[in-house]
Length: 325
Ligand code: G3H
Ligand code: 13P
Ligand code: ZN
Image (tube, rainbow, N blue to C red; front, side, top):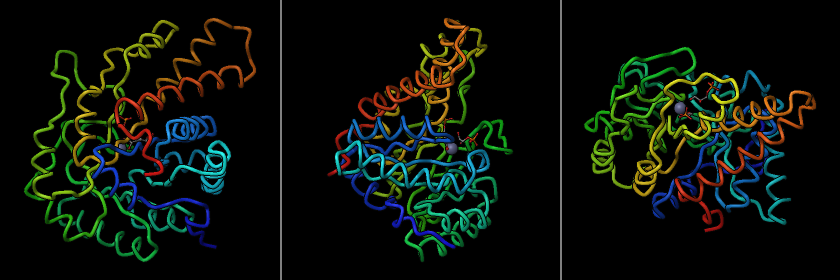
C-alpha cells in the first residue's frame, strides 16, 4: 500500500527552497542511516529553528530497511513536535542520488517527499529523458525532484570519476526547461568523501561557475553536493586515537557561506557527520577501554553530531531561525 508523505507529517521542498533563495540561506540536507544520526539532526534543527531535509541514499535504504525508515521519518516529525512544544520545524524526506526511475517510484510510494534522480553519469540526452520521466511521475504526487548536470570527482556508490566535469552553464537553461526539475545539483569542484583536494592543491571551489549558472537561470534553486568541510580538529582527534586519515581536506566554510547567500538553496553534508561520530567513539574507546555499553559511546557520538549540525546551521548555511518564516 502506497504511503503519502503528507500523511507522515512531511513536506516537499517547494516552500523551503522559495524562502531560502529569497532569504539568502541554504537548507541543510543531512544524511542519516540510524537512530542516533536522526536524533541529532532533529535536536539540532529544532534548537536552531531550521527547516531540514533528511537525506537517504540507496545504501542507507538497504542498511536501515525501507519500512523502518518510513516510520523513522514519521517519528522524526513527532519528535520535532515534542521538542518544539507542539510546533514542528518543516521536515522533508529526500532520496539522495537515486539512479533509476524504479527506485524513485518506490521511494515516493513509501513516503518520500522529494527525490533526486542523478542522471549525471549518462550522456546529456539520456539524462534529460530519465530526469523528465521521474519528474512526470513525481509531480503527479506533489513530490519535488532534484536533477544533476556535471560530474563530481570521487566515488558515489559504485560509480567513480577521477576528475570533475564542471557543469556547463550553457546547458542549464535547456536542461531545466526540458526536464521540469525543481532544483539542480551542479558540479563546481566539490566532491564526496573526506579527500576533496590533494595536498598542495588549491582547496577552492569554482564560485565563478556558480555565478555564471545563476545568470542563466535567475532565481532557480541550486544544490551543492559534496559540501563537507572535513574539520581538522575531528581528523586530528580520530588520528590521535588510532585512526589513519591522511590528508583529509574539505570545502572551506567561507566558500560555502558565500554559496548559501546566492542561489544555492540546499547543501548536502554527510562525511562531516561521519567524522564527528567516529572521533567521539574513538575517544571513548581509547580513554575508557572497559566500556562496552553502546549508549556510552553512541551517546557522545550523538552529542558531537548535534553540535556539528548546530554550528553548520548557525554559521555556514544560515538556516537557523528560518523554520517558521
Ligand atoms: O553522496 C553520498 C552520500 O554521502 C551517501 O553515501 O551512499 O555511502 O550512503 P552512501
Ligand atoms: P560529503 O561527502 O561532502 O558530506 O557530501 C555528501 C553528499 O553530497 C550527499 O549527497
Ligand atoms: Zn551527493
